[in-house]
Image (tube, rainbow, N blue to C red):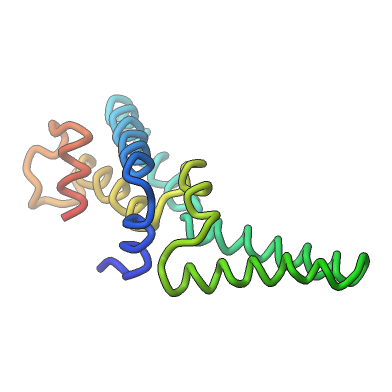
Length: 150
């Protein structure tokens, strides 16, 4: 089940970035499928460790808040503005699913947890984990991704 935040994040991302992420995912899937079966397991393990955009945003924001707080203590209270701005970004993200750093993180290739899960499901289908998907091993990466999104 998709969370509202996942849908909002993808909806708030420029379509060109969403398409670039989808093309990279399809290319990764195609590369792994040509090397299987060990490559599939290896890629599944990589996906378990992949950070989604929400985690990257939390790390980035908390780092800036911490830096702003330390600088305020060391250099003066004007640095609290940094913590305030970053907190406002987090609030905006919580309410709207978008904030100014989000397109930058997406441009760096951070995916939503839904996008990561979709690749994982496509790999498992190609490996044969889902008996109900016939001939999954013969399907191309884009077909597998489409099936995994359903």
